[in-house]
View: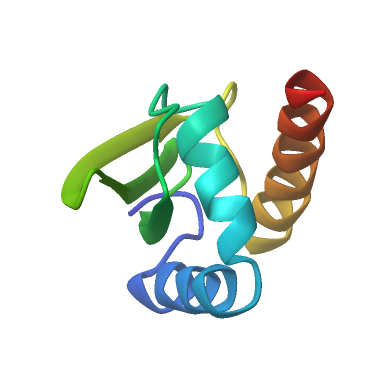
Length: 94
């Protein structure tokens, strides 16, 4: 992984998102991954270019890759970007 995204950073972000913000991960899959019928999702990895999720659709695991709109520089940039993305998705859903 490039630009300050080690495997440890990816793992830490994914663990945090899956444990504390599972609803947001589903929102990412639906709003940015195009998996509108996802009932659950898990963040598998994150890097400077995007994130890999697996979404549950009708009992099936569907792989989802979401590209960011720019290259992220570090974990703090990822944190802020994920917050902005979930806010954007929630506005769109209204």
